[in-house]
Image (cartoon, rainbow, N blue to C red; front, top):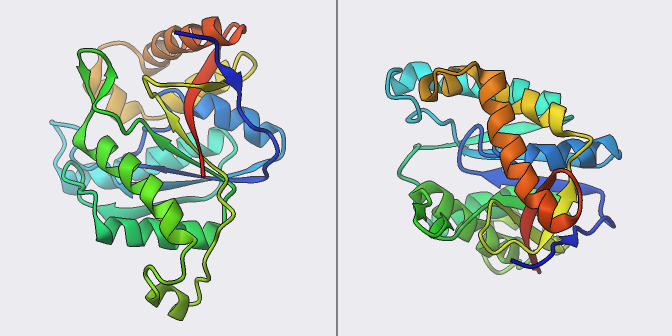
Length: 242
């Protein structure tokens, strides 16, 4: 693996679109904390409420718990706007309905940078990525183009959502094809607190305390990114120019 380049900095607003509560916190939240600390506007859109993520809690009980933890987690890294599309967790399908909903959100929020999660089959060789992550990542890339074309989903214009051609990049966190990075050395503690805020979810995954679990995971991942970026810790992204 080669060295990672610095992420672009000439932008003001970003929209993160991911499948589940906690997807941003497994690595990307440290970068978000760095950006919001510089005065940039970052917003979150969750395609599902994460209701199928905890085996011991029925979906109807799980969804509001995970929503609440996502609001708390986002606030820790300076994100005030968190929205949910209420797609069913675990069975997201890439296709026209999802593209329309994502294009609508992009037109409403008008970001220059869109962030999503790894769309590829693997996190790394031998580690399979979930169907939801792949469906959302693929659909985000398509929806960015849809958002800028008034003749795709013309009903959005009728609803007052004019085309938005201002997205310049899509950044995919957790990609095995990472090209760029953000130094998260100064924001690592904030990132750890943000992931640890998903206490219900983490407690179902591990016997470790959420803070210890978050620290172990994020410092390990951050160190791998930092080694390629020349810093103690870094969050890596696959950057796609639009």
